Image 1 (cartoon, one colour):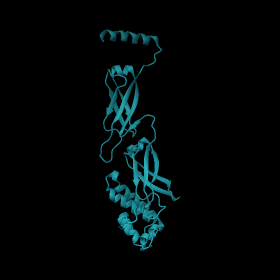
Image 2 (cartoon, helix red, strand yellow; image 1 turned 45 degrees about the horizontal axis):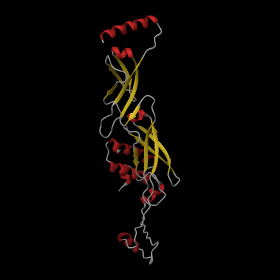
Image 3 (spheres, one colour; image 1 turned 90 degrees about the vertical axis):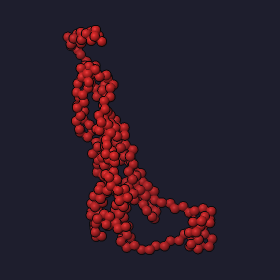
Length: 273
């Protein structure tokens, strides 16, 4: 596997060139944007190796390495351990510890679920090193989503690095409740408007304006659904729904003349209902 070809850079590429190429290629081939998952993994593997000077030097100048495990062996013969693992000669198989995955959380605003977001995260790995990673969060990220970045976890032990697991959290919004891809809000309306019918204007979290018609005679507590104005699902191409619950509010009237008119109106309504 040619890491330089995967990133589309020459072998004398600088750190800046690598970072720029990685950002471009990862956005282009991200599975959430319709890219191939295997290609995306290769891009992350290539960048993880080439951005590290020591790993890059080892990659550019590979040296053969032979290791034999003779621990707990009676004869100490280097090949006995291989047969023991393969056929259970010693009653158990040796267990290899791998580098651990690193799990972190990142909180985004509700609007980021609609438009996506470019972020740079810094995190510590068990080896004590601080890592930095540029990430493009695509539209459609939901609360609780976990995004895996291969080869960006622990590197304390020899062998492949662990993975970075990024858990998405959505910051609580005072106006909207999020349920999967669906979003919901409440609107207070005068009971007089519920009686006569009206039209209200709703602004979605991404800034779209929705004119919602409230039919006359609507009851307080009625929930209206607007299809296709929820959080986008990038993989399927659809969107969730937007729900608006109407709460009737009794207006405060101090003018006695107006109160009398309301009473007279109520009397007339009572006669025909």
